[in-house]
Length: 403
Ligand SMILES: Cc1ncc(COP(=O)(O)O)c(C=O)c1O
Image: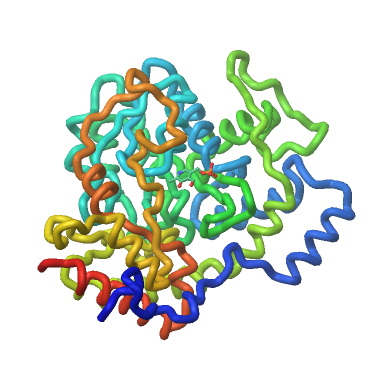
């Protein structure tokens, strides 16, 4: 069948019916108006307090601390755990730059460790060789539509006396062996940026079962005010020398997130069901492999749906970019994602003397030769569209894969 990129007809003739994200609800719009008219918008406002309580309850963590975004959550968690100059922190080779840069904001050195070829998350096999006497913390990232192997990572971390900070920016509603991601390590860091599974424009939160860490994270992200303090009731003086920041959020964000939290499980189950359907069908196509879900996922969350191709047996002249272009020409909602491993992303500003690469070969091969992604909304398309999604891969790989 002639490919659309070569002038043939498109699989998605009418375009892919991808829902708009983030969702908006009329009742939330009314509540936002009321909040606006009420003049009180910030500073451990009642909705921020409520969201912290509800998010902690939802994840099963003791405490949640909302902050301005999912980058400063990482930085504040590291600060609260005592990571600073001279320390090393292990980060995966493939993630968003924030995971690595947050380490550097603390004056510490990000140490890059490779990812597993199937889950694309931090590879426990390669973790130990990167640990030095300077290592303080490991940051596994539950990437796209998978989860890092928390059993093995925790075992290694405990054996070496290391802290674990789970980067859960892609993992709202994801459960590993019955526990929500972010509650297995010392702290879980979430982003609520506009494209995320819970999305309030900007925003983030750290969850933890360690009440002392929560108090410190609350204080250092709220310019020294006690965790939960009302405006004008600063509480005691923070310890001298503890640098505190203003990384507060507003009740506007909390209100939007509260409305989404109510629907999170239902939406997560729908995306997981559709992802399983696509995985089963796509993995049958020669040369196509969907990112493996978390090995002990009780419920796998999906921020992106990631698909890899076998680049070694593409026909001459065909590469990843050409496959993606051909799929897009069919109307298939896929793209190249970030397009770079973390330490080469266009906004990565650390020079090579500021970080260390312990291993990265798998991430390099996957990102530059094999990986494409669809947004979470693609997993919310109706059944007929999911079938067309599969058909795009059948058509394009049927033409481009030598087998
Ligand atoms: C894995 C990961 N960690 C951290 C972040 C940072 O979140 P934010 O954009 O809210 O600062 C992101 C954002 O995309 C991310 O993908």
